[in-house]
Length: 546
Image (cartoon, rainbow, N blue to C red):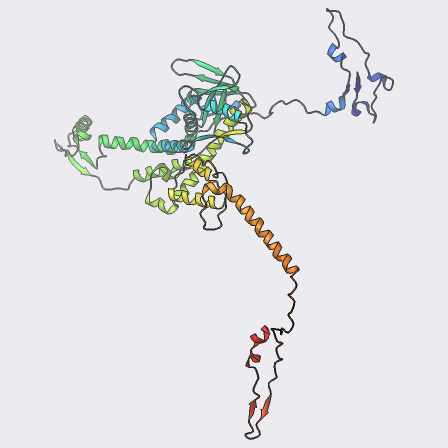
């Protein structure tokens, strides 16, 4: 065994290769000891090595991966056991915050409408297992994925699982799924975990070390390894590993809306605020006033006492208030709070099913739907499917030729869809079978997968598309050969036929045109024109033909 020492260690251009060149750099060879009580200095594996160990190349190798060195705010917030969020919000735990988000989702119709609109549009179409490169996918890999997605667990289907993930992201800002592995080490089932009961533990660098699920009434706790859980979250800008709920960013609007709704309930339960005051008699005391207020509440307030006129006695008088300024317009405030919630989710008002006259000039419904798809639904879709394809398709199944995708329902007018598909088929950008597949119809047995470009008004049956290419190829070849023959004929014209004796030439040489002469008449002295033998000589067209 030989060692090739690095130049930086020896200090020479040509490092020593043997003991004779540099004996002080080579240790004494010692075979492994055979004494069981004495620890060997070397090993048999090291001594049996019969190559050249290049220490210089070994020194150039990158160091072993050690992970990130930055510190995480998510770990720092929970370092003392009480997070800074709990301190700012009155010692609210993570579970209490999630309960508050759920109550806002249940109690606020606009939060619920936005969350459901995003989740339903995300899963409005069908899911597909799509090839990354067309025609290069292995059908065996596709069948393995399809087997899992058709049965994710005994109680839920895959589309319901995707919708629940999107809803949790809209409410809590994070979602969890448990991966149940089968005997072969591959995912066999996928189960949705209630987000309220989950908590995440990090190390100082923000890497997840453990997931914990704890219940409220039974106090049972379950610990999960990071490989068992798929977690989606909307990152908090302050601590990127922590989730930020959309409701947290608009909690003032949600609280104001809920307060106005509660005030409205009290208004209709107890009636409007009185527009008058009651002036008691001169001998009345505070106890008399309290008794009269109780009497007034029991007899003149509430739904059961509607339209009952107030009655005074013992010298009491009703003094009507003057009409003052409006403190708060409830209807406008409700609309303002609604618009803030819709803006927080980036959901247009028309998507929630409400059309207002004031919003009609802001664009058509189709443009609002397009903005909703590309600004809201697509980012959520990419967030969910990218991690799902990495953790399940690539990492668990080691499949790299297929990915899982979803399609959205098309809410455009049927006539508009037909016109767009017709134009794309005519210019060759779409196939007929692709359009039929989107409509849920079976492809044509032959010809539907051939791209065509329509250049005339001829109607070509689909079944003749396979033969039409051969026919056009033969016609084009025949036309090329005909043109070549005509060119050769022009280059080598045939010889003229022989002349028969006594036959005159059919064509006579034309006489040269005579010049115009002006002659003076001997009798009158006027100029006169010389008569021509052929009138056609003055015609330029005739001269050119000759």
